[in-house]
Image 1 (cartoon, rainbow, N blue to C red):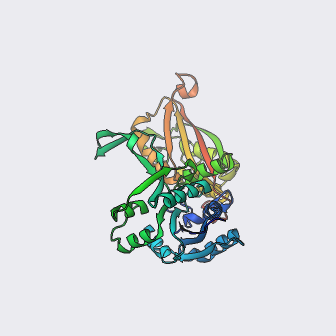
Image 2 (image 1 turned 90 degrees about the vertical axis):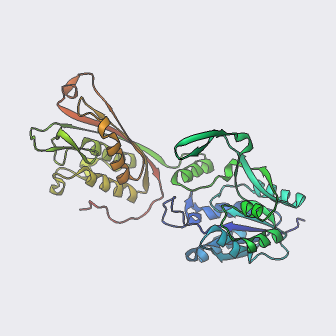
Image 3 (image 1 turned 180 degrees about the vertical axis):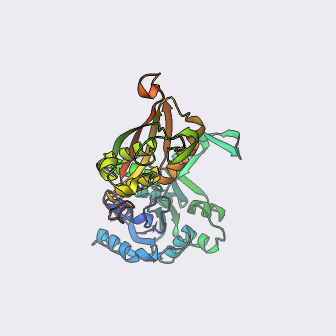
Length: 400
């Protein structure tokens, strides 16, 4: 029978601002269940686990307790849910106060590493038990690493001696609590805190599944790794064409901004072919029709409207349908205007509206057709959306 002498601290108090989900990171869904649920499932399969202590924000104390209690069921594991601190270190300090004297080993784990397998917990615990030394899992660094000062590259660092740290990290309970009691500096992980207190740290092989979910791209990667299927990605394409106006006073709008010194484009709104093509791409990716069916020329409120109005309206519609924008690419086709002087400004303006990377390119038709004759401008856009979970958001900015 396994000796149950391990206390496992799960840090789940992070707000997840970079994930942008509007809730603490540990409670964001991964394939329909919170990250915390996935993390606990692997943890409670550890045969010698005696205690599970979870540090969470005050707003989620009850939910965390319900999640953990349901998963633990009749297993002989004591559960404690504690209030998280203002920092990671503060959260762990609160959790360590609940570690029982009988728990000889403490493993500290980030809930954001939700797919860490049980075998990794076992490996770290076994290292601590057999060597009586703090241990952490590490992964080899595969990229070439440069040391810089400002924008100057000083040297290439030997990556053979570098490793990236993961969790769970394991310690003798008495040593970890003593180090925390004396710590006066904030450290990025517990191994660093223990080293500062004079303790040796051993490295064990990490696991690629224990990567940290920090950004929407990380969450999509976790969904793909978990399910083996793309995480609800959808692509769309959009096109728009406008001829140059005869009105010499009308400015040219492309990508929501004015291109000084250029003749404008005819249209019911501002003739912004770039923005309109992007709107069509976004709507088609989400299966929501096109710009005409949502913001048609029969609606007088859109007469002369700037492209930003349509882009913001499309963002509202796709968000209400449960999608987020991953990236957009758009190409302008025509002999004029010249795109290069305006590329950075247009990309910046569009990225600010869409909240995602945008790339702008240009080409010509080698003199063929009305575009080759400089009679107008065309734009072709592609958009990549990811399913972010169905949600009932507010009515769109353009709701009638």
